[in-house]
Image (cartoon, rainbow, N blue to C red; front, side, top):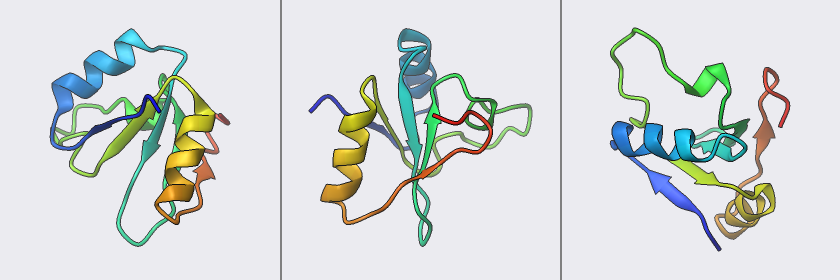
Length: 86
């Protein structure tokens, strides 16, 4: 499985997204289902808030099926982003 996790690693996460524009990202938050996004989704690009993008883990892969397998292995269901509809 080619899945990369970024936690408190904003520069590495931004680099991964730039290198994988057709990839997928799971935004993982406590007590919520992970949200599946396309790598270019505005919801996970960040803005001028100054808050760390990876303050909660981002699980990334070029293959959506790999992220779905990751979620199953973690016992979690994913929810697709309504904005980017991955």
